[in-house]
Image 1 (cartoon, helix red, strand yellow):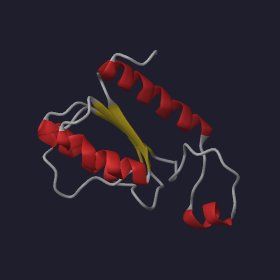
Image 2 (image 1 turned 30 degrees about the vertical axis):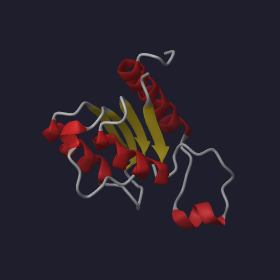
Image 3 (image 1 turned 180 degrees about the horizontal axis):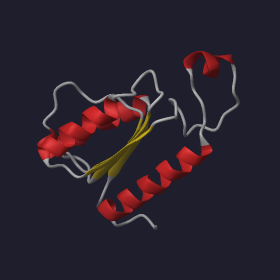
Image 4 (image 1 turned 120 degrees about the horizontal axis):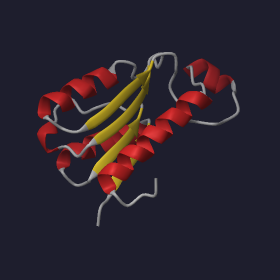
Length: 129
């Protein structure tokens, strides 16, 4: 069985903690924090999407790409420069969203999902394209 892990925000942080353990065939993360100490040489392939205007994790994509490249782990890391945290989330804009700087971005969300599905299809070979 080929199993992958997918996470958004806190779920992405959990997925990034699990990825180097060698338990999964692939991981897909959206705006998560990477663990401070991890052996990325054992990591499963990772596709990740970050927002360049995300106050919480804006530089984490670069850090993750460097760590995975250095370890020789397959990855597709992309930072969407003008997007904020939660660009995938389709929800009503309330005061909480405005306060936290959350904003859905339909074009970015579509691109991120397409990259994610292609990546998982390639590495898991069990998800229809």
